[in-house]
Length: 466
Ligand code: ARG
Image (cartoon, rainbow, N blue to C red; front, side, top):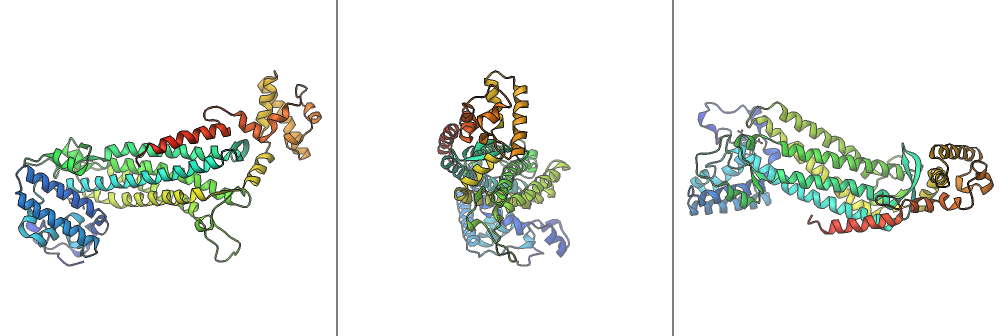
């Protein structure tokens, strides 16, 4: 970083140089340089608009654009010396522009402030990030649908309280994750609408005396709307909080999913296998294969939740309009974007490669009296009141526990001890297949319903542009 401590763009009213520690303490360039491209896009749109309304000549505008495009290339090539003393990405780029094109560079900042500039940059950056994240959600959902199609009739135990409850199909279980991600997708699409509004033109806080035309800049930058109050435009970061909040829910879903994958890969469950390329070993225990990706995703949920609280707290005490506090919005926001994107990416890569251990899943479903409700429903259909049938089946289960027999392993005579309405047809409902096939309605676990759900999902996914 070059030393330009005496050379601040705002140095006019100051009589001594900034304290060296304060300079580093207040600078944001180490992290906001991520927004260099958006800063340049915003400046080009601003200069273009200034020329349209006659504040800059077309020649000045062209010099500015050419200079900024050169700077974009320099940054890309790693030929840009970011300076702490120039505080942030905005002043670094502007100072370099003036180095390159002279006095015309100093005209770029006419009619704007870093306050509306930074608010615009963050929105442009976040808009692109949301699009990338939406793309990864779609990729992960496509993987889940593929897995659900493949395993539409694979039987596993469904759980409540993590105790075996009723048999479900693995495809149905995967489609539950698909549904959660659909809501996550919708939330981000909705959040994007409020991100995609342009604060540029708010200037420092009150607007500007120049005859700016905000429609022109908004159109050039692809904004869907323009902030309608300058004080609000420069100061609120609710759009970022909203994004992190939606991200927290994405991470919560991925974390729950992770928890299941970790359990299912254990020797005790033994339901699935994750490919070696998504796992790591132990440096001491040679037999270990650890589900690191799900564990790490589960762990990373904490930092995103932390960022949410961080931004809410950052905002809550601020009077209008811009305050330096807002510089603290970027690191949590950037880290959230990176974390959510990377976790979704890892899952989108991993999910299609999950291998199902059909036999042990099925065996687990069979072992846990998972068709007990089916027997109760059977008795109800034979005229027994539900509460009585619940009692009858409870006794049959007790007998099964004592004799180490599942309901389907008992003879007709054994079952008839508990109720004389039971006949041979009972065995149709006591099988795992009979149980899942019987739940054949919208939202039910029957393989036919899973296939219908995946067909609907395929249509939804095909209709998305991200
Ligand atoms: N680096 C600042 C930020 O991130 C840019 C805006 C600075 N504005 C100011 N008036 N100091 O918020």
